[in-house]
Length: 340
Image (cartoon, rainbow, N blue to C red; front, side, top):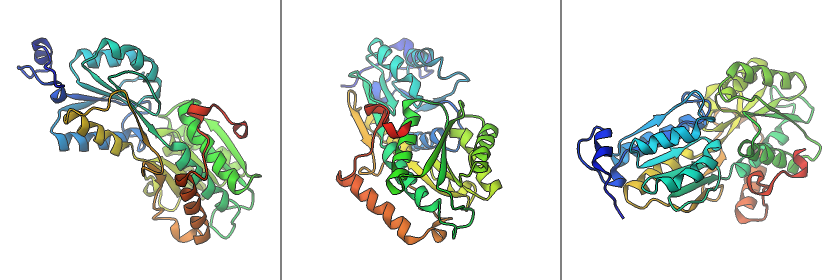
């Protein structure tokens, strides 16, 4: 049911007249790392812009230097300012969003990468563990094939997360599981940068892993991950990109990217909101079966990867979609023994 906002809200918005709820402006809260990360935030913002253009809605991104700690304050200010739809890309905002949503029943709320309760809260969950499983399976095959430039004979690969959290470890766990499905003896080095916005630190950490024998490092660190890709290029080894197709950042040095279609999710939510069909109280799942995650086309590396490796990855993908393989999900199942 469409509702009309009060005159005070309309004046606050600078519109001069009352507006219907599904015509009220929309906000996208940018996660740690900020815009310009070439990854999660930028991909979501591209979908946000596309959704605004398609629906004719007004909207703006909201950034903060301390978006994690100021979550409740940021979200309350957005609702008080008259935004009818507030989408947060920051994982840490899940709990405060669930708590404050009842205070703003006429505001629609969206949280990413977790499930939260509330009639006016929509949860968007991706199958990062499934896509990361495929990335790990590919890496485990490539890492001992010395016929590929930049690869040594040691079964050692790595992954660097932004911060240790279930949201990030969902990627890392899937990557480890996929790698060990190919080779149980593969060593997967794991480290955390404790930041999503420090490319220099990412480069330093990745170079350390390369120095320790890894020849492929998966980045799950937002803007910090740009440094991981730079380190791969500088050392003659490989990075694996995340969230968006990052293969072109350093052509030939990014083995593949685990693409996460948050842009599709965000644009779709704006369409539903505009059509007065906001999916409040529901969980939307974007996994391999929904084409919500997957590996990049590998435009710059496909010619150096043996076809048999890619065929093996495709077979694993089919088995996951059919249910023959169930990938462990840290966010709902806790931590598996192989993660330790």
